[in-house]
Image (cartoon, rainbow, N blue to C red; front, side, top):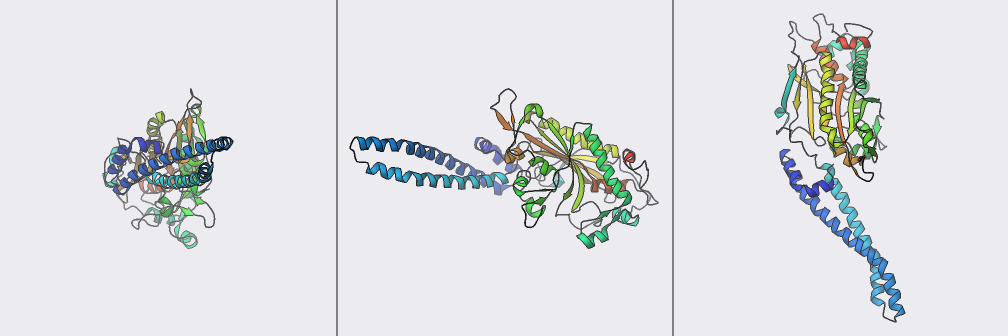
Length: 425
């Protein structure tokens, strides 16, 4: 969320950002936050004075009694002070709760390089890599191909778990693991520490890392417990250091999250609905970095480069897009997507999301860094995240782009060492 001190000092910046996002409803929230914040500070001054007066009045009563003076008014004042302090504290607590609720829902401040646009149709393509293959035969539906070869079972998964789930079997199960291991090995060489996080976290931790609207449309709640299945390893990794202070010498901290991901929404009906692209559960390797504010924009480009290296090595045609103001969401200050060519749809589809969240998550989670030359000086860190590989989407791309006329699929050479040196699925 935004630091109240930033909103207080830069209200026009916040308003301008909301206008860029075409989010007029939240414009009124800025004035409400500032008004309540001003009232809260006024109450604090009053309460501090009341507490000071409470400490002084006992002495005044004793002095008046010694001097033989009437203490009726002083006693009445002393009796009224605790209730006034209590009332002020209660009002301040209510205001703080309201202000935090608004701040939790105001979006991050966008970087100036984020393009203006209403929706994903106005995202800006930055570059294309690779040439889509031309096929002289009709491609099979990737789900059909997987089922026919015994690599996946969608029917039985639907029977026991519902739509949007699947069993991976044999070669495709090995391909899923190969993709994960390839990404992990690549990131490890770049200084990332592999992390397998808890697959459930509590609500307060979740509120620190994601858009609150996601609780209704994305997250799976564990009935009867304060626990949610994770939608990505970014979320528990981001919350791992809540209420802690880093030393500058320990940053940047590069982590590679390895986990299944659980999501309620699976997309609309359309081409290849029985398949691997939009599903309730999939495996993912995620890049996550804690760093100083000075390093975050450089690291954002590094994370994108790492993800590009993975898809370039797989030999999959892709392009990179800069996500526009109307499509970027609440948490990121800037986001790139990598979209891979899907020949059956004759279109690029998202496989990587790469975000610089600046201090937005750190403010919510109260994660700071101590200045190396000033022990008392602390500031909020920056957090960044990027997909390295979401295996279900990558597998669909491989099944389509490397499919042969006889129904076999060529395994990308970089994965063969993880699949017993096999060349074909």
